[in-house]
Length: 165
Image: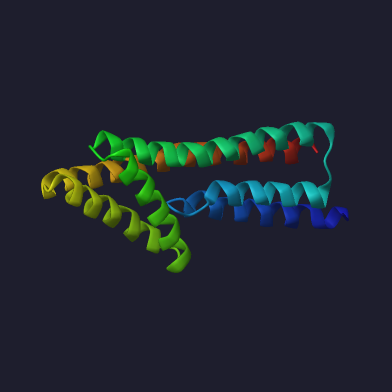
């Protein structure tokens, strides 16, 4: 890549990463994956030095971990709120389908509605169903903070990669 193009490309990639980071305010937004894809793009354009390969492997592990922790914390929140595991799994699927059918907010609507309706059907108590739904929301909050922190660490590691290269 020509030297005059390196700074504009790095700035563009950083802007994409920041969009991924701050886009995580929307719970189903794949911000960590966007940050990872931007770093992959950087590696493809700039090339992978030994340090770049090591940093990219760490970024990949953080991306995988961030995506797993997202689902674990939301499910744990719903479980803590009293939801059954079966309900949590159905709500996760409903959230994915909702996101695919009505992006980006379909999943935000479908998952809590699924939790509430299934728990109300199971327990015949709207207060307990509401408690399980609030548990899911609390899990979303915890998930946001965890994903945001992981995304910020990923961006800092990428900046180290850029700086060392």
